Length: 320
Image 1: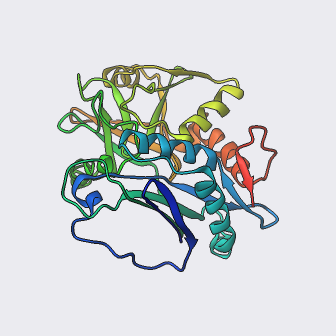
Image 2: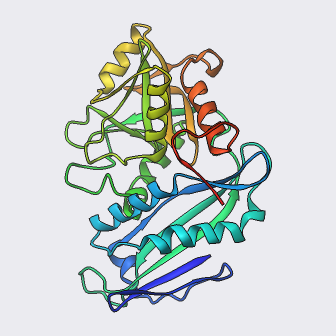
């Protein structure tokens, strides 16, 4: 794992060490006040076995945007990107060769002051760890709309990838599973009317052959997979709209027979096909994946780019 410390206004002690526990004081400020952000990305193998990273510069940019929101100093590019590349080179034997499996990489950055005073910390630790993983979802997912809980509110931390956003979602996720669903379809925190995310993913709907996804309003995480998928769809000639979309619009499209697809977009699953959306006690059951036109096609294109099976015209893939 890669480890770096920030103390006395400087980054120092940057090193790669064997995976292991880290010392932690009970007064560690990240534990008390949540000054912690993280990222998620993957390493792949090319057809020739070469290790590849997908858009690590975007993860670097986003972790520093998240850090800024939590009053944390920026991570230097050489520590994040150069350290990431070196770590993956060392761990490259752990990149799976079987289809659908990858090396998941988790950068995490948190405050390490030993103090219970509420203020931005003066010391921090940045760590990158990795582990092999298989497919995140083996089947299309079932969602339930919640207006009981919210994920984020205007002016909050919804667009930051900070630890508290995810801890705060667990109760809603647990209740969804107790009702037989895989996750929650989140609505906006103000009117509880507009769709925002599904679980920990961005979300899109195909209505009348138009791919519609909620626009980034500051309450939604600016997903790297989301940006990649929308770029590919537009280059495929598909009409894409980034705008407010209400849950009632989704339900009306379903009733009229115009909702043909829904899917989540995120690092863990890349694209998660949505089979069912429960709203106000009624299940909206979508067509099987075999009958879908857009999500399967863009998923294949994206996976082919990530694994260097086709030419990458966007400069997204980093060979190591």
